[in-house]
Each structure stands twice: as C-alpha cells, then as structure tokens.
Image (cartoon, rainbow, N blue to C red; front, side):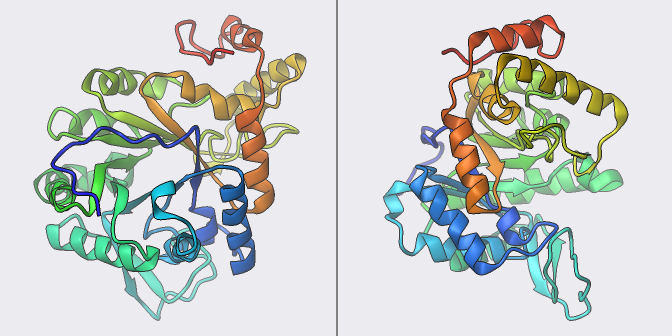
Length: 336
C-alpha cells in the first residue's frame, strides 16, 4: 500500500473518466449485465479512471465497480469516491425512484462529522473491494444543496469532514482529497481555508458555459489544485449527436439555454464535427483541468465517448464558436 505523507503530486487520469452514477440506476434501472458490459467496454477503450459515490444508487454503483475491480490490476486504474452522506436501511423508502435513483429500502443522510466521514469511507472500501482509493471527495457541500444551512454545513466541512479526510490521506488510505460540487462559489470559499488537492466540478466548465467557473479555474491554477471537469454534456443537453437534448442542470431546459445549444450544434454541423466530441474535448485545453468525466450507462455509450475522445477536431471550429460569441475570446481551446 502506498503511504503518502501529506499532499502529493496529482496523478495522471487520462483524458476521459467513467462517471458511474448511471450504473447506480440514475433515473432508471440498469441491469447487472448491462452495467458490467459498460465497465468491460471502458477497460477495452483504455478508460482507467472511475468516479463514484455512496449516494449513487445507495451503494449500487460502488458494488458494481467493485465487481470489475476484482479482476483488474490495481496499479492500472484510479478511482474516486465521496464522503458526506451515509447510507442507511429504511424500509419505508419503497418508491420506484429514491433520491433520483431506481433503488428502494434505503436512504442517504448527510453527515459531515469525523465519525460520519470515517463510517462512509470504510463502507465504500468494502463495496469497492479495495484497500485504498486514489481520490476522496467531500460530496455536495454548497449553498445550492444546503440552502439556509449552508454556513452551518460549511463550518462542519472545514472543522470536521475535511480534516478527517486529510487524516485518511496521512494514513495512506487515500492519495488525494478534494470536493465534488456543482457550483463555483463554495470552491472559492474553501480554497483559501483548506489545502485541497483537487475539485470535481460538474457542469460549470463546458462548451455551453464557462463564465460560471472562470474565477475558480484561475484560482485553482494559481494554487496547483487540479480540476476534474464532470458533466461535459450539461445533463444531456449536448450529448446527442442529432441535436440538443431536453434537459439542463437536471431539469427541463429553458428557451434561452436551448437557443444557445442550437447555435453550437449549427456551427459544429457546418464544420462536420459531432457536438458531443467538441463538448468532451473542450475542457481539457485549460491547464487546470486534469480530466473530463462523462456519465456512462451502457457499452454503447462508452464506445461513443471513447470515439469522441479520439476524434480529430479542426482548429477552425473553436475560432468559429468564438467569433459567434459562444466561446469566450480568451478561452483555452484544444490544439491539433
């Protein structure tokens, strides 16, 4: 087992990571065979980074990953999971969709205490069948999640959860620590107050929008904190090769956002480029970004994402998007 002493150099994760919320039955059931086929396809496609959480299917995503990990060489893949919620049995939870996942008989409870972090992490290790994880993230700290309790929960994160995560890093059970969130503001609150290795930021630095992460990316680069750019398709809005999807930020898309997405699709079509490929590759150009994580549900989705990862995109596309005001003029763009 590796034994890091404090903050370590951030590992290489490759350009594309496997977001494992969908194989935790996100919004709809995924059978065991389909989930395992997706993971097998990821391995064949040279995807070697997998992001999960206890929240994803109340442990189901982690258990399915653990099945795959048992047959893979441990030194050849990296995994991140999260703390901040503990999963408890609850027979009253019998609805078809529970916390956004097609699971029943359990509930997820926020717990940012030291004991809660330790309890959650140890349960994750059992489900993943691992002795250590590469990245441990504090899940969903922020005002969007906690509303009026934000100040209270942030204080507990800074005083208890993050210090306990740092202790796990010192014990050699975790290589790097960070937070996994959907908003910039809480990142800017935490960065000056706690020494993070990385931030998983979902949906805020994408082909569709960059302004919501602009300040954070600059601050992360100054501090040597790596960004894991998740949700490159903005909840499915940019995921379909045929045209914009119907959802954005896990909700029905509003007209102005849909119009912007349609304009992006039109320029990509004119250039002969799959919009999903442009969406997947764009965040990687920023020097603070370590990898892009896309949620993947099936072998077909994995194979599509891998093809998009490997697609050659003409540099003129980025210039056309900038000229149309759809990308910031000073945005970092991929080079050929």
